[in-house]
Amino acid sequence: MNCANNQKVIINLNDLKNNENLEGAIIFKRLFNLDNSSTDEISIHFANQFKEEEINTNLFKIYNITQNNWYTFLNFIRNGRIKYDISSQYIENEDDRISYQKLLIQELDNQSNSGIFLSLGPFPKFDNYLKYCITKSINNILNRKTIKENNPMTPDEDVNIKYDWYIGAKPFTGVWSSTRKIEHSSYVYWRRLKQN
Image 1 (spheres, helix red, strand yellow):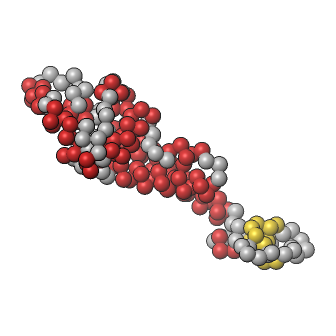
Image 2: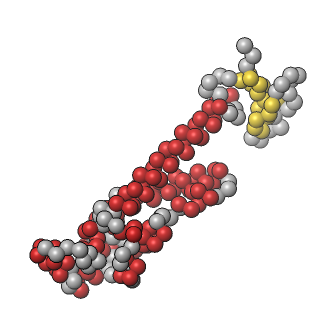
Image 3: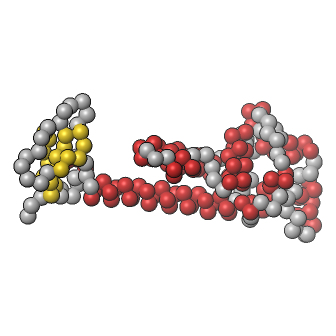
């Protein structure tokens, strides 16, 4: 198949036939002659029209679909996910994981606004995956915000003004706990719950 930018991809129609992630992808199935359920004359004519080799081989080029769009699509069809999904969930380091979560949302935005998912859709399974990932991302943001509000590490993060703060190398007497070392110094933030 000829793609945009004169790139080429190989399409294995057996990967696509009866694939559960293509459920409801009527236009895509018709364009690749994967939909045998239609028996009306217009649908049959439409399917036969796209059996011509020149139209099929240049379909991606016509719709400006890149090789990357195809590989992302194929990954979703085969595995039910796209690039950055696994990293955004399973990397141990929280800062790295959050970076991958951002990359995943950017990739979802890119793929849902261009390429196969936009040009040859709708793809109900991808649309559900997109909604799931966005909901999960919003929940992650809200959870991080709640954790930060309830467990501030610096005076600036203490938006609810729940703590007394002190900066120093050693704590005052009483119940103080260190939260975070101040960068490029030997001092740390110390906090204790405000006493009523």
